[in-house]
Length: 252
Length: 247
Image (tube, rainbow over all chains, first blue to last red; front, top):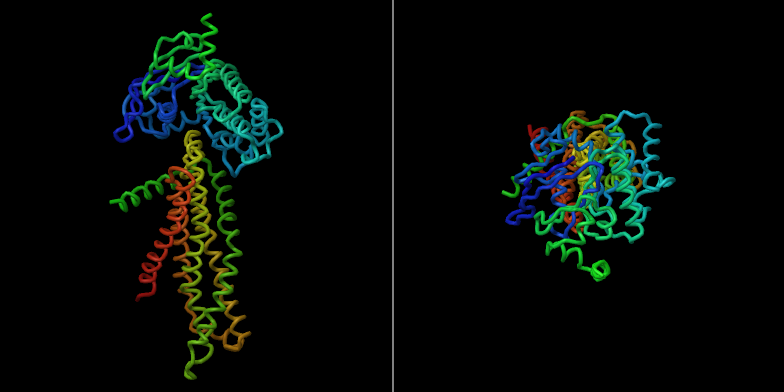
């Protein structure tokens, strides 16, 4: 489990993250939702140590990450998989090399065992047979899936996904969402997903935190979100005409 | 103040670059890759420039020697001295600062803006060590060989031009390049090359690693890498020349 307690972050005079607390549970898809620029990505970057925390605690199974030594932090990071918004695949490496990379760095597996694991991960994300392709040869959806394969290659205990379906068509988005949900449940991973896509929220939102102007405004799950009385969340969820129609249909 | 900020940040980056490698076998593989990427691929441009510059130096030397009191073997002597002392170690390294430096800065800069460096960090990898150390080690290893080839080709180019243009005879040129030879000058030249290899790769990597923004900033980092590497090469050339030759 990951728990954040009263975390704060400022950039210059901008208070970007304000006293946010939340618990991310293993085996569940934990979603962080909110408008663009509300501080979601900053929270994740604080959680993985890419930004320094101003105050608060980030607990990985009870260990306060910001207070750990560099070596202890690296040990935790070895258990983290991250799916970046743009994929962040290594351009100079093939798909197979990308997925194999964490295995080469942190395991003593034989070449055959590594290849077996790579093929297993590629099969999970439905990219079998694409081993020798370079990132430039992949479509947007394939890049996301390839990045997901790399993120799970080293059996992560914690998985972070930064807008996993941004820029994807609705059908591919659902494929990615379901992949993440299945992997989370199958391997009991503590998964943290940043999204502002309401389709994703309704598809896989088991434990949701709504961030507004850097603050935690609401927590709940996908069944509660449609009944919310929180004004900011209501405006966010029902911003589109489609969601307004869903609401009016459910009220009838 | 800004200068001190960059110097401080540069040395902090170097501290991370020279931290204990996480997996030596991968670092060695990367070093071999960089030896090819940085060194071997630079060979054609170095060969072309060296042959032409050798020829040009020879013609200029022959043109400058218009006194009958100066023997014509001085053409070979002058070409050798120019190439070994300054042209190959400094000018060729300035050219490599353009080719290799911009390549390193743009490669690492692009990795920074596309979050590939963040991905390495999150995996628990020392990204500075993994990305930059093999480039420095590869360049420090291969540059002396490249410069040795440049020296040979420069002197050979001078021979071709000198003899074919009639500026001197083959015997005079060959006698000239062996005259008053001091092997200590190679020590001076190759020390410069090793220092320049370090400057080119580390300074360029520094600018690439600290890129923020988009494609425009990658271009700026690449330009800064070449400009500052070149300035530092000339500065250290002056310092090392004073140390080695000003006695």
